[in-house]
Image 1: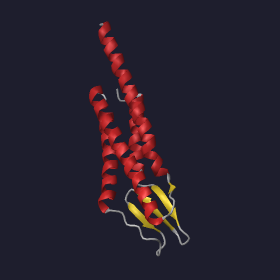
Image 2: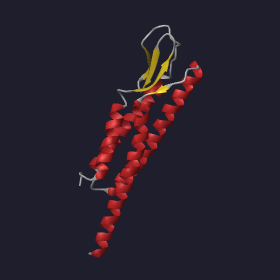
Image 3: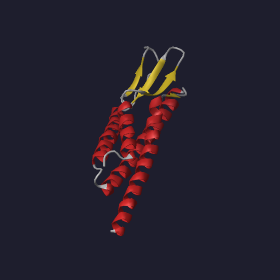
Image 4: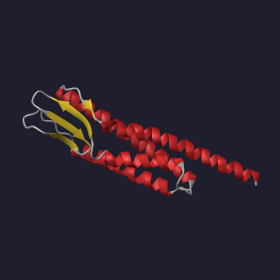
Length: 156
């Protein structure tokens, strides 16, 4: 049944993964202006700021991991008839989300060390953290459903 509570949790994960492409991860304030770290790279509104270049492959990796999280969470919702497969997908999603969190915080720390400017974390940093909580809740409810089905099978 697609209308289970874990489907709602997985839908939230999907929404946060898609929104992550459009919101800033961190902002760095200087006297002369602001530059922003987003999933697609570093951008500045004013020229003459401390130049920060991140590796293009790191930005592509962050976008690929985020896209994989969005796609796999949709796939997990659609695999509602196979709880074992859903649990496997959620474990993969948990690992991908942890990798994304590590990359984001390592990158913000790396930029902080390069520039000496403390980042002001944006709302995008919290999306993967909330997604982790949603994935853990979805996993818990899928396990409950599986136990309920097994107990009903024993009664027959």
